[in-house]
Length: 460
Image (cartoon, rainbow, N blue to C red; front, side, top):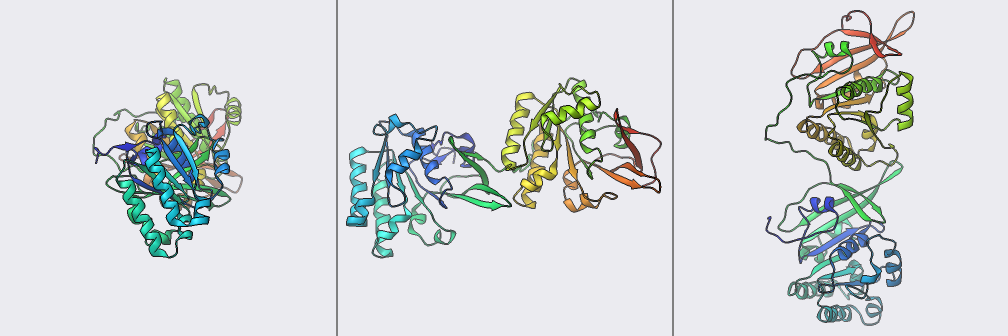
């Protein structure tokens, strides 16, 4: 598999999804609804690879006027107007198709191949050619003859079309394609989520599943689906526990947290989840560790105000803030991992998982994200602290229902205790993996020193 010559896209994450890139000199179908970025993806490949020695021949058919394609193409950062007519040649098959039909269009394509000797052939839209065939048999003959002509030359072909799922099994172009890339844009609540899927890649491995992407002036930015399959290779983790920054909590979890572990702290609004996480980060910063506050709740100014309220200097904490509005969870994960690579962080607070759950396309993928991120952090020796909001003020049923407790090494529950006089706060360690933990419930308060405890544990 590894000796296949590859065609790079100029965007490494996309090449990673494609197992290192598309096979060279292959027929590639790019399918999707209008506006999904098919033309942009094809041009991304063209302007990254075409040269005077191996130019690109770009045929439009009946989808949109050639002038419009070039005008909008110039808004893309990679579109090089100086290359047009030198290494990228545009041609419009529309008038030929309308006057003389499909065979005449094929003759035009073949003449262009002989004249230009291109390294790249793009037909946009390929599906529109079906309209000009007298019957399905004529179109099938067209596809077979064009495939034969291309196969005799070293050409990278991109056939673009607005195909439906039902056409993949019957349309002849799918049978001869070496690669099929499907682009999709679907509604998720009030947001539009774009996803890329490799349906076929002949003779090569690729990353399965849906991979989100964004469209911008830089083209398609792909965020490969984070799916950690685990590793049988052993890795070292420190045998010394680390402090949470709260002495009593250290006692409750059996003497502190294991480095590389993942801790979930769940509770209702106002119970102190973020505050507990901040104390965890401050402890690491005091010990000279690089730490990251990955916030989806409060922006840096709001976080700084919280710190000032307790007299805390948060200068040693790297704040990675992203709004939960229009967030792609894959994009967020890779941005976070890039901050980890840059800083060498050993502690991360994610505030909160609830926002990531909303951004995730479904519950199964959400579990995969949390698991994969936890595994990645563990191998890097990063201790992960995650907050999760529940709606049950006086119990822990929300955590059980969320089905994420089993993905964490430690689960800490914050809840309210209703007494005749007042409402108090209480903390319970529900789980610690591989060690004993305190079984009782501890009352705590939020004071000017943060989370503080008073008195012994209560029976659970």
